[in-house]
Every structure is written in structure tokens, then in C-alpha cells.
Image (cartoon, rainbow, N blue to C red):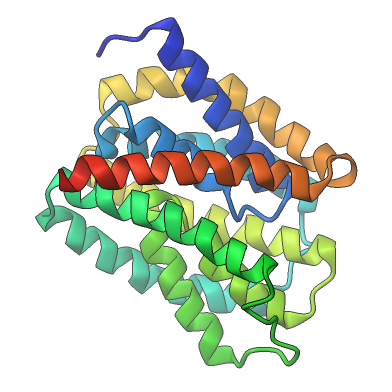
Length: 250
């Protein structure tokens, strides 16, 4: 595929923001790079490019938050996530690329609308912890959306936010959960042919952005105002998501 300066600029920006979100702000919007890449390349290629980069971010995050996670909650989400990944893989084998453009776009727009509704007070946070079954269900949703758009964060975060974890334990739990789910996805992605020569070439070009962003994310957690960071991210997600939906249905 043809790689030009504009493509690299857009891709580097998306990966950098995704990495900062993943290691610094709970990973809720860390899938921003996927819809951005899917605007200009095949969705399967975008997924294949992003997974190794996300795994690089995972490695950086694991080092920073090693053994500070909630083992109980991580276990529930991972056990639920495995059948979710399997279901998504079955769907992918049968679906047209436009279906995945639509899904990636719909998840992006839906996530922004969900966050907006919460900021308006229309969605009230749960005071009591959700039961264990909710953890498995959240894991299944996270596994499915993670496979099709690298967007498992929202489902996992809704469960974790109800558990009363400390800020560090919350962040560490998201890191370990998606490190495990991403390794699982990698084996299936390889079987589906996602790791093409073009994908691996772009992974090598974008890896510095993933590493730098992951390191910055750990530091940004203490420095950058969360509201400002997510404001920019939501604008990008909304624009890219709407464009993907339009392209899939028209």
C-alpha cells in the first residue's frame, strides 16, 4: 500500500492519543486510533496494525502497574472475555468489511454519546458494587467489542467503576485484563490473516508512537486534566465514527 506523509501524520497522532489513554486514563478511549485508521484503509488491516501496537502499550503498562490490580475483578473480566472474543471471531469470518466499518463507527459514536449522557447526569453511577455475574457479562461484551474494534474499554470500565477500587488498582486492572485479552486475540488474528506484510510494515513505523505515548500516559495520569484530554479524544471519535457509518451504509 502507498504510505504518504499525511497518512503517517494522522496515524501517529491517533496511536499517540490511544497510548496515552490506555496507560494513563483507564483505556476507555484507547481505541481512537482504530476508527481513524479505518477511514483510509481496510478495517481488517487497521485491526491488524493496532493489535501489536496495543500489546507494546500493554507491556509498558504492566511494568508500571505490576501486581497492583484487583485479581478478583481481572479474573471475572478475562473469563467473560474469552467467549466474547470467540463469538466476534465467528462473526468476522462471515461478515463483509462494511459490516465492520459500521460496527467500529457505531461503537465510537455510541461511546461518545454514553459519556455525554453521563456528564449531563442522565446516567447515575451505581453506589453498590455490581455482582460477580455482571463482571462476566461485562467481560463478554469487552471481548466482543475488543475483537471488532479494539474497543473493549467501555464495557470493562462500567463494571470496574462500580467496584470501589483505588485509582491505581482501577488502572492496573484494566492493563492486566486487556494484556491477556490482546494475547488471545493475537492468536486468532494470525489465523485470520490480519498480520499481512503491509500491516507489519506499518506496525514497525508506528511502534515509536505507541511506546512514547504509553510512557507519557503513565506520567500524564498525574499532570494532564482528564476533562481536557478526553474532550479532544471524544471529538476525534465522534468524527471518525460518523464518517465510518456513512461510508458503510452509502
